[in-house]
Image (cartoon, rainbow, N blue to C red):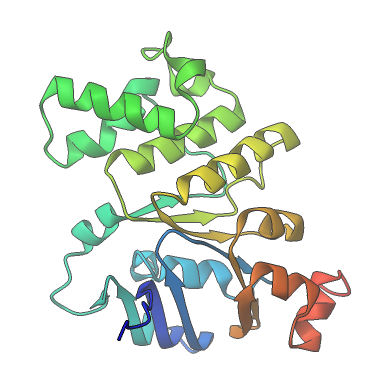
Length: 257
């Protein structure tokens, strides 16, 4: 008898509540994400999607008076357990922010930074990893002859792809993206979207986006948040053509947001 193969979730939240002081920011969120998929988090501003995203690399820890209950699991491990090494966790969970934030260093040193911080000293290894990461982020051909130049000489779209390369250099298994194209022009946005589509072959990607069309183009699953609650999550095609909840339909069709 052949057993059905069930994919284990790569990332999972179970009954997650998060408070900033007395403010209840996330309310009982349960959501699982499989390996090598793109999950888009959508919803109006202030609905909790970026807060939820930051649960997976514990960046909410940096905000005073934050309290979290429930379970956040990566590869079957509770990342809020006291035994969890947060530095190791953040090596495994890459993060790309809304605005490109290159360091005031050369293009090469921006990508090499994470390796050096983690104690890698072998020059040949660093060179190979930098080249590979820049190729993965579809930037190598544009910068291979100017690696010693300042990252600030790159365009906004190139800077964002550089930040993606920097995140990939330390070989995470999960990539978090918080509105990675919202500050970019349409051509750069298209390049980032193509890149996300390519990267899901190697990574699990969670992306926050306010752009419905973008969610439709890049994600396998879409989760709709509203006022700290997860209203529904489904295959992206189903969410955009046949959502279960009226509130989801109203948001997707632009009746509010």
